[in-house]
Image 1 (cartoon, rainbow over the protein chains, first blue to last red):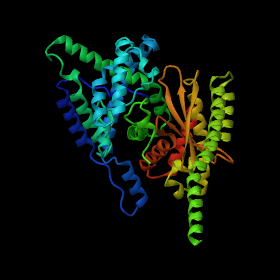
Image 2 (cartoon, each protein chain N blue to C red; image 1 turned 30 degrees about the vertical axis):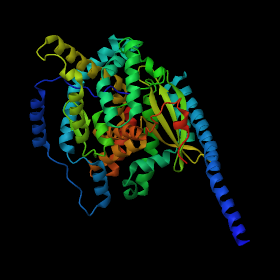
Image 3 (cartoon, rainbow over the protein chains, first blue to last red; image 1 turned 135 degrees about the vertical axis):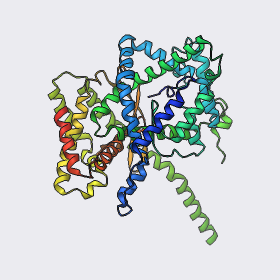
Image 4 (cartoon, chains in turn blue, red; image 1 turned 120 degrees about the vertical axis):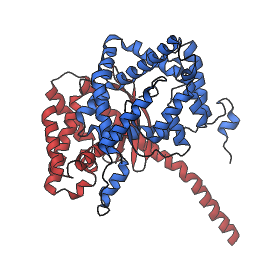
Length: 274
Length: 205
């Protein structure tokens, strides 16, 4: 599931309200109780789960779930019903193409020149041959997409993920990814382009944000429904899946050790030092 | 002369050492070949059931057969109960494993409709400790392609699938953490888990 970067709101006065909601949730719920030292197995499980704010997180999970049921899911289903699959894929590709600056910045900060090269080639090919990003020609030409965000960049620098967080609106996260989310917004030139009072710019930014949310939600619909149907504790299942998925992305990043020398330069790629 | 013999010994040892790694990967390559064909065969059987005709009852029976042949369901069940396996009574263990088989079949068969039109492409295979991991890409209508890795154990004598990794997420680990959380929130009672599993089978089966 190559996802477009997590959806983000354009600059707005929302953070303050979110903070109030967060404070309310913390007051309502508090912290998880740690098992006693006399039960080492339970303690090991607790530490491995690393979710000390679980009661608070569950409150936000419930709130998000409610919002999803009444707002986002109906929109995603309507989108799936109204827009044929090839067009949806095209829109997904365009949104992904618009994420190029952030992706490229992170590729470079991760110290992965080949990934940065892929990102540049993808942008050039898909923006031109792929008609402003609608068709993903670059993948067929040998430049497949990869994930890059500042949460992953921090991970590649050795920053630990920290405890699990379930954030209002944004969903599953952790301190590292939450910080990464903020930095990615700051890295995005679209955040800074134009006068914020210009209604056209604002409308475009909100359209991109809205489409991103609906596109992402539509793409996970089937998996989400089947998890909710089959899990005994969907919250715990989402927690596990989120972490595992992030670990897999980061491992892929760290294992991407392609040499910087181009393939035709046989002398430097095929002759490792003896 | 001693010098000469030593030299020969060293030369022989060096030769052996430089050959050994060349043999080892070849032997493993054959093994991953076996794992690949096992996964291909099992995948073909699964796809045939999903896309084939037949009542849902027929499909359930066929699916049960494939799982029993190709998947180490008992081992996965034990893994998923984690630390609670040791505290469970033998009767609870037996009942739990029996239900686990049913839940697995029920979960899979309840999704057959969504998977109609599914196909898969074989990818690379690698070894990971005692297991072989075979990569595939699963394509299904209305969904982006998914990278699915199959973890196969005991490849040479009696190959069985012990885990499936979807986009890097392990299905058995996810299941284990789901059960663990359920148990912790239900007084660590294996009986509570067993009755929840019974409900699942009853409501979806």
